[in-house]
Each structure stands twice: as structure tokens, then as C-alpha cells.
Image (cartoon, rainbow, N blue to C red; front, side, top):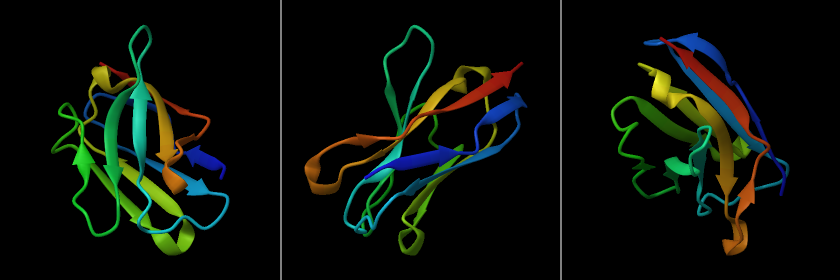
Length: 114
């Protein structure tokens, strides 16, 4: 499955962005979908993941500011990012694991200026 992410950009601190990621084929609702990010010089880290019927899983640094959701009919997962901080800057990667195998999108850049 190919994952196409969009919605990145540049905002000032306190601003909002919404990321979208759509799969190229049907992704069952039981499959985990979500987002990871990687800042320059740092390891890729969890932002948020979601599996239908389960609670969302958020990274500690985004809890309370970011919200993940998905539209299974559109094979799309969203990430609403509010109260953005400069430390949220990085490349955001969409993720899905159909059949237990990890798939990654191409990444979308998010830049937050102070």
C-alpha cells in the first residue's frame, strides 16, 4: 500500500495545521494508522496512532494539543495539530501496518517558527 501525506507547511508558534494521509487501497479499520515525526539530528518518534475500536495513542509531547482521527471509508488518517511549538518542527511520516508489515508515507515538512 502506498501512503500519500499532505498538509504540512510553515506556521508561527501557537498556530494550527492539519495533516492528511490517504492509502492507495483499502485499509481495514483494524489496521493501525498514524503519524511519526523526525526532527533534524533526532530519531523518528511517535506522534499518534489509532486503530478503530481502540483509544488513540499519543506521544507525551503532543498529548492535549494534537488529535488523530480517521475516515475508514476514505482510507485516510488525519492529524489536527493545535498550539504548535517550535519543537514540533520536523518531517511528519504517515504510517500503517496492514498484515503486520510497516508502511511509510513520503513525509511532509512541518516548520513552526517562534
